[in-house]
Image (cartoon, rainbow, N blue to C red; front, side, top):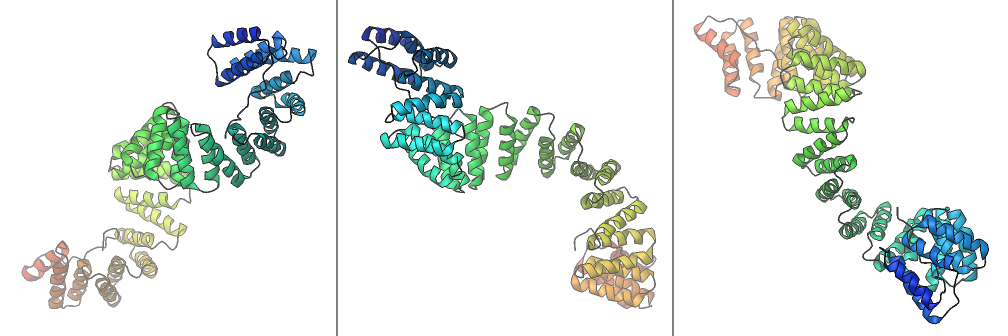
Length: 522
């Protein structure tokens, strides 16, 4: 949110000689803009030959202008005790107290100054600041509007009015005033940034991005400005621009985890995975106690097929802890793809233990058991998946396949039946059902299942081959040979059909049926 813009308080009157001495002492130091303004007023007062203030009043004002709030306030408080009717002292003391954050004390002095000088826009602006700091937005607005009536070009009061309206939740009105303030303060980054915040809150992302871009251009070495701009670009849907802005922020804020992680996240959104990996690595180095950079980096590495790198990052995240079921599951998947099914099982069991209802981990555990060639546990794992999700056709098919390989043909047939009802358009499921029915001796049902399979997928050579084996069982070798040859024609990779043709034409190989492979493509 924006910062208050203070106006200068009315300067004290002084004799020409005293004014020159004060000005000389101020010119010997590094001064703010306000010091220069004070000098100009003091010179004007001296030239006019106005009544002199005490030396203490002049010194207190000078200290405030130098930024020594504590010293200036202490001196002015003493002056106010001795001369409570001194309006200059009241105005400057109120200004100093606002600057130091003592708004309640400032209010007393500024109200007195405003009562004595109701047409002084600087005093009214500072009075508004005191009210604003105290949360009295209505009184702050009144003071700022009075200041603007007296001096419509007073950009500080316009900015502060916009800030008061923001605080009061009146964003549309605030946007109007801040647009005017930004126009009056074209080189003020803060004015444009606050306007951007308000426009963003009003769901005007394109206008907000424009305001933040101006602020960043005016203050290009501020990492926070580029962070604001990156956020605005994201809201405006400009993902690549957002990634560039956050990258700039991270360069300017090299020790900021927030900037590095924002740059990485935006790069992912922009599909710039190389840059995303760089910034997630930076984020991980900045916050070695945080798991997210490792998890995000691991996923990117896995997508890039850098499985060794992905394994390293998942292990790092788990070591930091607490280990999440997702991280354990993902590490198990990576190990599975790296050909380490035994290790995969170990981590997947931990994932399931932490989250028994995590279907993905249960599925991966079953696949890992399959890869480990532990058919009994694979069948048990697939059974658990079907119990958790009775409508998972693929799980029923995999369970059926595992049961068939274990010789549990009756239960396999029942599982294939369930899969065929859930996924009636899957040719592999019908082929598997045919195999189970054939082994149970239900040849008619088996033939119907095989025929359904190759009607659904004419290139499924396994179904033709398996139908051929039934014809052989029925004593029809010619029909069997036709099916074997058809199997090879539609699928030259069907080696079982090739073996069966050789056996029928030259002898002596046994009949071979083709087991289903529910994970292969149709």
